[in-house]
Image 1 (cartoon, rainbow, N blue to C red):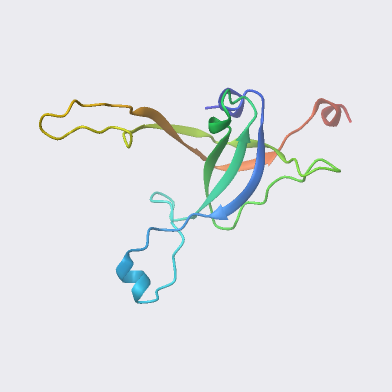
Image 2 (tube, rainbow, N blue to C red):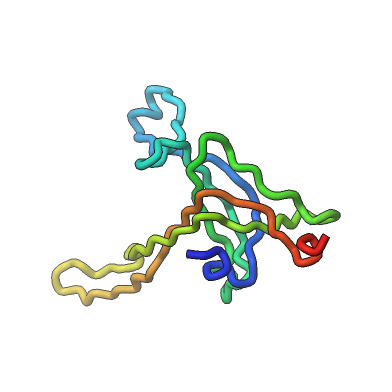
Length: 139
């Protein structure tokens, strides 16, 4: 998918951090350090980019995560001078839908099933770049 389709009003980077693999209680007791998750296909390290979707209709939907597989931590674009705002364009963006059924309950005998499942999605990108403005293109 294109960046503009997923983020029609743009996206702002809040931060980048490593995605850590699940660590069992047994591993924690042994004192094993957490390991960073690796991409199943490429073997590269997986990074989580926290993003504000400027087109979100609800506050709860405004903050999303985009995962990037890369050998080193991706560097966010420079902030707009005088602000902490970092507009970004994601390259190679893919969207994977999934069903979030954590809100479903009532599976016991005699109970009415109440399903409040909703459609969720996972975003992945191959990279990120600075937003090129029209004035920058003309220069």
